[in-house]
Length: 414
Image (cartoon, rainbow, N blue to C red; front, side):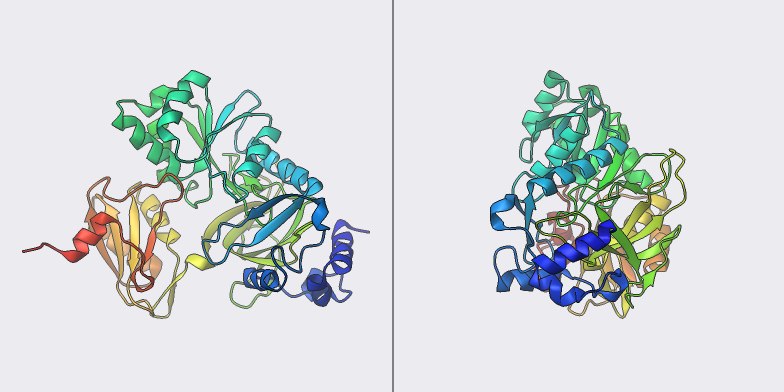
């Protein structure tokens, strides 16, 4: 029996939620998708883990919740075997992303509740590296500890290196003089953009590699080797990947450079397994062998359906703005303000000091296929967060605007 058939048999026997969906099927295409909203409703009916919990409660050793950035968080249970699998999958991803057994790594993600904290901590240990559990809110202390402890690598969100570099310069320290050799990023699309990567590398004198993970699948499950496009998946034997048309849900052939929405099915997952889970990630999948010699599939995340802005019948993905900036060789910070519900045109885009704004405005209109109002701000006007930096602000839902944008919109006072 294949690993997938075994998993389907297990789900059908252990979970009423999945039993009603599988109905004896052993081919994924015959089974409906699972959505985040369905998981939330399952948990409302049977809290805290929902009807899709398959392992006995007494077998659980860990409880995480998803970040909840797009709605109510979902609780995730893990057995000891699930936990060990997460470390295996993540450890390999971190090795691909450049962590070495001799590295001392400052882990700078939030340790509270979600899997990016302690689960990724243990995955980094599984890579062979030594972990310093920094978390968030310790930036000044970390600047002292990097040279004192011989910290050679840092793991955090894409925003964090820029934030930490600013804090270093405030106290008279030059980031590149502190001794880091490598930074691994997670949690925010963008480390694959050449200009963003170059800015981090210049500030710190390091190499940079990105990772990808999902709390409800595996906390880290892909790493960037630096030799070719995309991040290598490390989910073989632990998850099945499908790519589907974002609009129709039709399954697409898993061939080189196929693009679409990602769908995940766990293998050998005991406690909170997912079956044909349709994530919000839109990606390109590469199946051709990589220049690094690995043959595992690679993914490049192009955006999230959750982040999509619908502007006068046009779908706008904010990450496309970063891609335009990258194409122009700029690493300027940016923010998007969407007014109205439904969102009204033009879309307001604020960019920190950038030459040739007319050309940028033209390219943004072409790339986004909607009208934009482009405003230049001074360097440093847009805040950079210690955790994830907000890029999109919707005034109709009451998002608080950065001070520089708010002042600009309010205009001069008499």
